[in-house]
Length: 327
Ligand SMILES: O=C(O)CCC(=O)C(=O)O
Image (tube, rainbow, N blue to C red; front, side, top):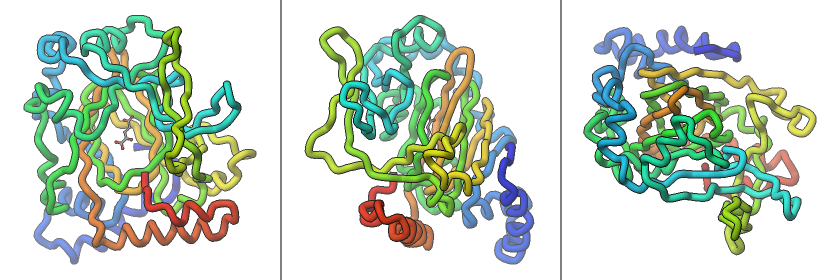
């Protein structure tokens, strides 16, 4: 884990002081993990947590083709590889929160693209909504049904298990989720840029009208505004290359860059903002477990309050304070 911020290295010390009296029955590693969950800091687990998964060695291209090659899967496609992102429509000159074109294709054709076959647009198998259990259910036995120590610590089962397969042309824009996230990389490398919820002020979130990509008569992607939909809150900042003239509040942010390599897992607490890039010669495969947020805990009201405070000091952003959409 490479820290760009100065605050996180202190957390283990504070964590040790707090967990020592609180969890006397746990050993050192368990204490650290328990602290991470209770005190909401990300944690890179690089101690072979998923080495026992069949997927680690077994998900070769040949195996994937045999198992799911003929299956039709949903693949997200946008001209610039950014999905659910603030996008300038070149036709109207307006900015939209743009969702991707969802293409249905045999997994074999998608895999060919991941292995280098030319395609006009980036392709990313990033369906979510528990995609491992729906579209990729033939692979479900190859990973654990949950992360046992995490299930035990939270006292509940995962809400969703997602399968991700993409390449360096696709990137996930800065956003946050109301989920506790255990994110395991099976092939390639993912790079997360992280910001804690307290830095929400810095990311210039605003509400934008929605549009989605569709195919025009020539098979080209074009943006189609979605009429009658609510505006969607979204941050326009690229935290790995911020434009501080346009987004001056980002100068107060202390982004943390975490590289998650093959066989490693990132615990990403709920509401931490994250941008995700990826790199790998034969594409990048990951499986993640989303655990529902404990809405009874202090976290949800605290983050909502922070959001309202920020909205109240920025005169043009009252609607953000009213929004309950935490994505
Ligand atoms: O891997 C990605 O591209 C995005 C992952 C993500 O945003 C998440 O797990 O919440």
